Image 1: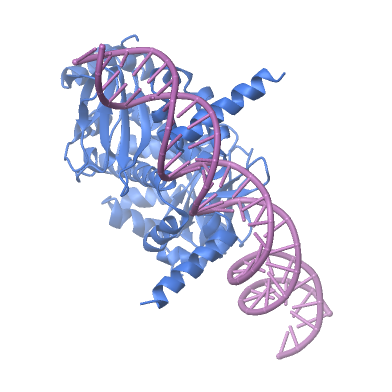
Image 2 (image 1 turned 90 degrees about the vertical axis):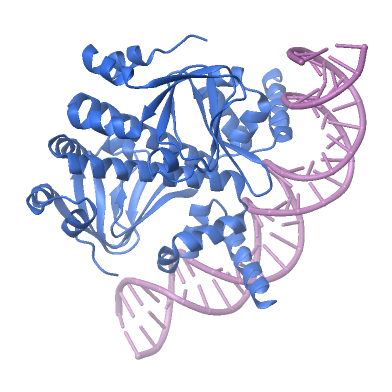
Amino acid sequence: MNRFSFTEYLTSNAGLDASLVSSLVSSCQTKQYKSGDYLLREGERSLHSFFIEKGLAKMYGIDSRGKEHILQFAPEGWFVADRESAYFQKPATCFIQAIEDTSVLLIDEAHILEMARANPGFLEFNNKLLHNHIRHLNNRIYQLLSATAEERYLSFIKTYPDILLRVPQIMVASYLGITPESLSRVRKDLAGKHAAR
Amino acid sequence: MNRFSFTEYLTSNAGLDASLVSSLVSSCQTKQYKSGDYLLREGERSLHSFFIEKGLAKMYGIDSRGKEHILQFAPEGWFVADRESAYFQKPATCFIQAIEDTSVLLIDEAHILEMARANPGFLEFNNKLLHNHIRHLNNRIYQLLSATAEERYLSFIKTYPDILLRVPQIMVASYLGITPESLSRVRKDLAGKHAAR
DNA sequence: CGCCGAGTTGAACTGAATCAAGAAACGTGG
DNA sequence: CCACGTTTCTTGATTCAGTTCAACTCGGCG
């Protein structure tokens, strides 16, 4: 998988001038994780978000029955954060874990605010990111409310064809809110339908 | 139900000085809706969000089978918006409808950006709102992934005791992602458990 | 008064979960 | 590079939470 330079990302997406970007980037720490390492554990306090430059991470919670539920996948070029800790400075409510060897930028939320204050272009960019994220989450909720397991899987394939190829089925199932067994059957049915033409 | 002046809300919550607030508020239009009126319909284009001063609204989508799914309730003091239209200037993907007689402030998203640009305090306030909203949505997703109908209902009671009393059960069911019949049975079971002590 | 939507209850049904067991894929160390 | 143990995936049998369909009650409102 190719690498996403944060610098490149900002200059091309946020429309910021190079000096500003380099000042933001230089103030961030880079960190490497091996597949399986935790970027954040439930209960920890940490004041930064993560920008994935390379690799893949998952954010998930563990319920009272010990089951894992994936809230988000984060491939290169994406942000992940437990807002509870990064923004509201409380103990984290979920885990963030690398599922490939991953290199990330640690981004201080306070610093984001500073940047937004100082630079209108960055403010607008940051706002667009947040609104976009909200839109995604609303979509996901709507799916969970209205669609069957099969429909959700089809929608996942369409929206994240790249991620589908990089994570085990068991994690896709967790993301969709169904068991691995059910997902296996859904796929079997779909294969059948496809063949029967 | 009491009224939430937007002016009061901003001065007390955002920590902004009065002149600034009044300039924002004066640039917004107020609008009244009767119960049942639409603030926004699917497919419409509209560039503003709503702040509910009084009353209650719901945001919902209608699926391919004609079923309604409630994404959000919005009582006084809350914002509602279809980001697709308000922020990304595309046709709305859902309906927003008053379920009580409601008075709202129409807030231009472009104007929010301007204000944030001009005033650091407002920027911070706006950011906090967005992050908080994201946190709520993540919680909701986690619930839908991990909890049973009964657990979700109990959590709803706890989180929105006020709304519970103001909306018909059929809408609570829609919000929880279950049928009205199921909700009725969940309530019956809970009443039984409660009595059996 | 009559009607219509909301809520309840019952019976039958179903999509998905659970439990169990075997097969394939994977990575890790020797 | 192979052998090993560990996940992952699949398939079958059974169970169960929640849906669907249908009938009936109730309260409010025109």
